[in-house]
Length: 110
Length: 111
Image (tube, rainbow over all chains, first blue to last red; front, side):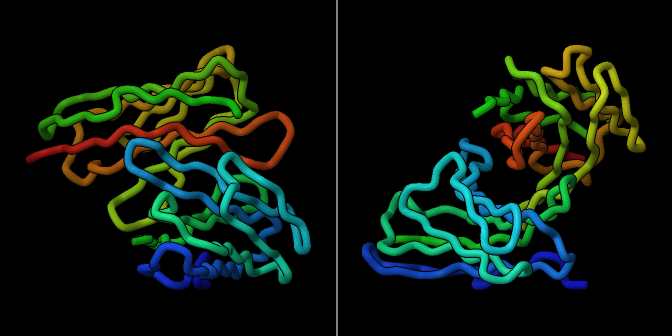
């Protein structure tokens, strides 16, 4: 089992560009999450999903969109990237507890 | 959003010392989890505590959940360089599906 995988691992964007981060899990988990981690801020929840076809907003959803078309995949989109979105993004999945995290995507917006 | 305050934010100690990390909130949690994160990796679960007053031990790590289920502590005995990392507490609400994380305690253990 690969667990939770994230693509890409690193990315540099210019302000205004768009991109999609892909999260995939092979554990048949119902719940999936996107967090961002910034120095001194801890992990903050962006969006989450409690099942295929469902999404919900977390603590910091502005500037991001998500989709869960397939149970194993959770996509995070940035329509118009801003420097404030420079961060490390973590995807996680679970049946309920604990959370299983991916290795993260380091995104820099110039 | 239920806030979790962790202290201290940073801790630098020498190998063999003992330490305690705290996680406090004004809210009641149905469960509380501790994760450890190493540089360049995602957090990994250490323990989940559910019952007020519960104490769990994981080798040299001792976790305690407060009686009122609002706070928790992590005690490390005889710290080793391999304990270096970011320790995060996360709380679950009685309803809902999202975990709220504290800002973490960054621990450095030097030989």
